[in-house]
Amino acid sequence: MPLLPTLHVKLGEQRHTLTDVDDHCTVGALKTRLEPLCAVDSAQQRLIYKGRVLADAKLLADYGPSRVLPLWVLCCGHAT
Image 1 (cartoon, rainbow, N blue to C red):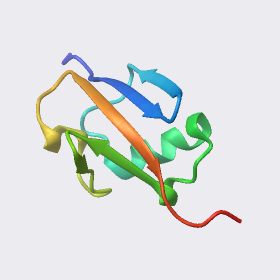
Image 2: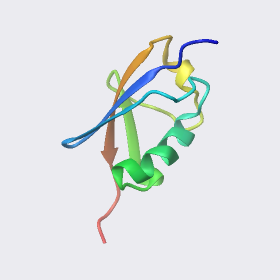
Image 3: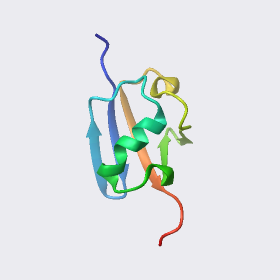
């Protein structure tokens, strides 16, 4: 069985580590999974890896073979 990537997610001062995410998971699915951790709707999240915004339809594996992915979550949209 291949090793799953470790994701280090940072949103402001919050930091989360996910170790059970398949690298064939889409970015959109990952954003949905991050909703309860970050308290940010997936439509308002922007995931940043190596200075690039990740596209929702792409797989995590599309961004390289890295076993450790440091991700930044940016919140976009208007406050209500």
